[in-house]
Amino acid sequence: MKKILWLLALMGLILAGCSDDGTLRIRNNSLEEIWYEVNNGSTEWLNSGESDSYSWKLSSSIFGEEDKKVTVDYGGGYWFWYDYTLTKTVKPGKTVTVSIIGDAGEIEIWNNSSEFYIYYVWLCPSSDDDWGDDDLQGIIGPGYSVVWKVTVGDWDILLEDDWGDQFDSYNNYIAPETRTTFEYTGFRRASNPVGDKKSNAEKYTTRIEDKCEKR
Image (cartoon, rainbow, N blue to C red; front, side, top):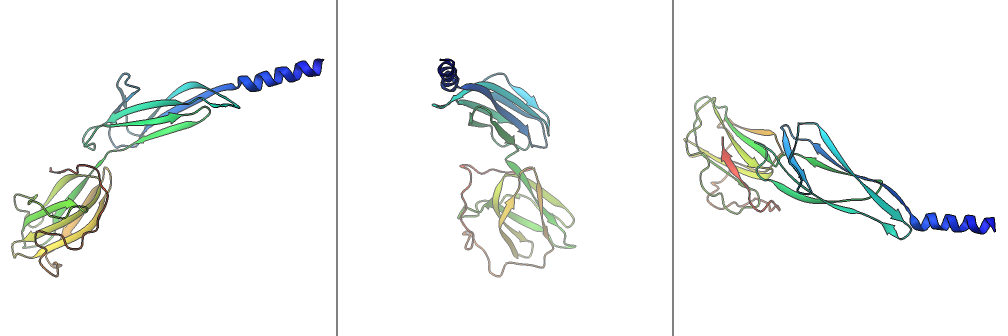
């Protein structure tokens, strides 16, 4: 009789299951302070390199486990073009991490020649067919540079100097929160004039809208 009662009690525990913490960790991998909201709650701020955690009691049994859908909204300052919303599934006994970093990087064109001038600069995502409009709208003299803030991803670069020579560079990955410098010396020109259409650019899947802004 005691054995039967013990087995019934054990089966009851198994059927009832148990509960454990499911954890959401938000980590700021950006160089700057970011903001975030969990489940449309209050706005919280997180310094660079810091993290916050949220936990929920979730049950599990032989019939399955309880999970929780959690919505996280976040954004930042200079290194963020956009604000983002994402949904994570938190499960009992496990930790889900949201690592946040900016979606912007920088392209610097440095004129390291002694006597040549850069008259035109075209910057565009590697997925685009056309170069578009001149992004410089000015002149880069010897020893000077100009910086553009762009969305993270693959970019193509074309410039033209005061001699009419063109210099091109394709499929350059621009990393988040990083300045990538391209040096112009005036001595490596494109083998053929590039024109309005890009002939050898590969196609890449990028965000819906790429951005480029002269600093």
